[in-house]
Length: 219
Image (cartoon, rainbow, N blue to C red; front, side, top):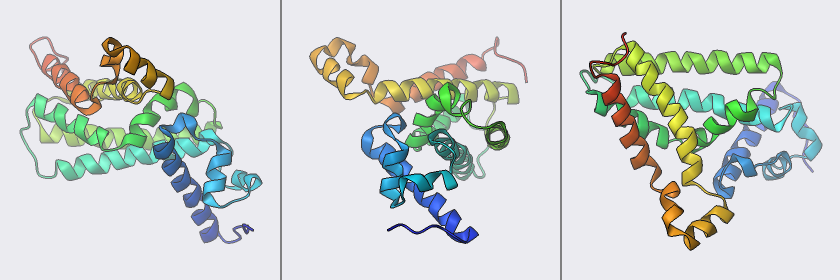
């Protein structure tokens, strides 16, 4: 029988168990849309009624994973670009795309955060998510700007494009079983499930090139 966490350390460990279980289930089941609180608590070895001592809802649990995803992306980018200078716009776009695709759960969550997660939690939890995600965003923009030849404004637009493209293309590239069967029957529609990373990078490089043309946005 699962025991209640009585110390702050034990409570933090239980919360981590739930987050790790949600992450594993998302990978096993083909996305966070298939993750339920009941499945998460079972995988974490907790009683279903215990989860609300750690997270008020499924949305809050998944929003925590999204927040961590921002920090992971920030850190991966910083490590990849450590000491880099003078990177061209296509090179900057390529590193944005490749570091995003290294975080499949974050790519998946980028669809769900504005769609449902951040609007279905309490205002203070939403405030914390916004605060921490924008802190990571600012650091990402600073890193990309310092390592390349794009202006701050151009980098901000590139990151905005990257987030939107990633949210859409990740879902297309990971169809539901019904759509996967449909694409097998109708190969001409299967373009929607083409290679995610190559497509994302190609589109981001085109975006970066356009942003830095003579008609691109100012700093």
